[in-house]
Image (cartoon, rainbow, N blue to C red; front, top):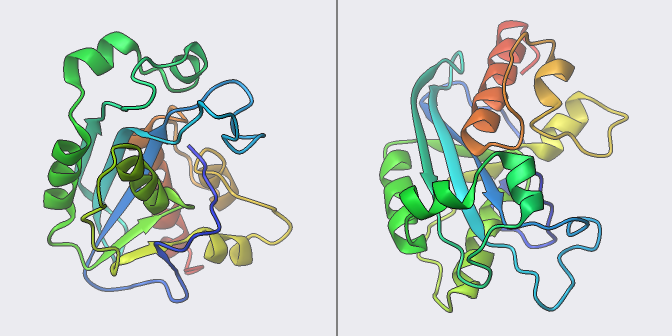
Length: 204
């Protein structure tokens, strides 16, 4: 899911890494009909994690080495909206059966990224963690020093776009990749596929 925020948690990527291990991640978070357009401004609207998806790749080719996925119980609005389920395919039954608490989910995610040299997201996904912990009235324990937002770099690569979603990135890059948009792991795989194609073409 696409999310832009004025706060800076992840740094803006300037140079595409060519060595080491990269984790690419995406998030899905609570949403309702029209919530993005009104920037979650209703008093009952809160941005809370529902899913974290990630892939581990090598920086040289962006070949996927491993994947990660976890569902997260939101606190302020624990019942998923019909809009969210229609968008992501995640049902309340899925969440009830497999959901983790926010601290549990983040512990699992940080274990997955522990040996990464770089962590990338396409947009303000890192800030979703901060917002989620605020909803739980907890301090966010995460160290974002290795986190980088690739959206500005993509906009330079594909001028004329106001924003580039993970759903449209593979097509823009010319990558032949079929996936289900608005599902965090699928979106992370889509980003990796696009970057793999761009790296092979020598564009990044």
